[in-house]
Length: 368
Image (cartoon, rainbow, N blue to C red; front, side, top):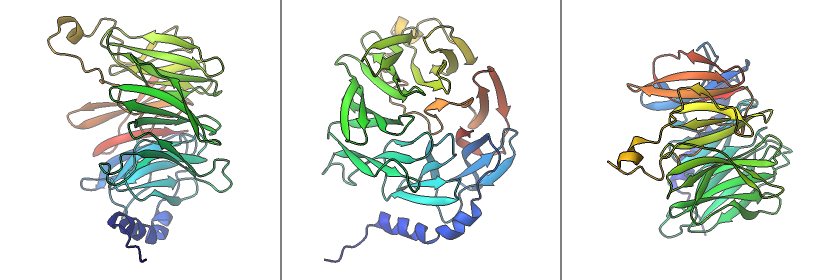
């Protein structure tokens, strides 16, 4: 029987046919560290990917025609390889170090992750018609020849809505957040056996935004208690299963994206719109950008309107959020439809404001 390719597949094939010209144009940036930026610059209302140095100087434009609008989905902080969705219809990985564009999936995807050293990518796929087939799968693909990570798929239950993926430092395990109704749990998957088991799950609590410690022995996550309206950052010891609460925010104030520094000594996190750091044991909390409000959220106190339980929770880790921070981290502040892009030196506690060319900056990540 002759199989007629779908429209999405034909678009993907058309783009792939033009990749040699694209690859020659997208030379790899040569200076680290640098900013990887998704922005509207050269094509009206169409976002492309660019590399800038820390002084705001353009190093390279990384995507262009024939690719349609490109949206960053995940970044490898060591190699600069970037996974992006083109025109909300196909997933690609631009291997910046080799000037190669890799087609990963002809169709829309859910959460995406790239391993710390760029060996593999993981992403969530499902049927085009979710009504007829609501099931989803986590698909893992090697990105380089000789990768120790093998191609595989991990099926998810039809009632599981995945929101986060994170590789272990050695790329042998994968953390997956799945929502069932209004509750989220974190599971760990051994990629060799494709066995999935919950490690942070509770009928009355939600766990999300997980990440590994640099030694792979501990998992950080955000815990939410809907009844108490409290957000906490917890550390789960994989060897013993012990869970330690490192920080609980004032009632009604969300915590998000906890990340270890590369030496494992510090944790960076967000509270409301502020960024802060603390020791790995939860002590010595210090703000990096903004101030940590010590008071409960006024919406919770006066009851004028209900604070959404999902506030700050369903948001996935940003495309430039690394498994752990080598040194720098990007922070965004939006004002009048313009972005203030700051690079934070987590250890030195310094903030550098980067003035990028006039245009709409949508996302950014640091490559070191």
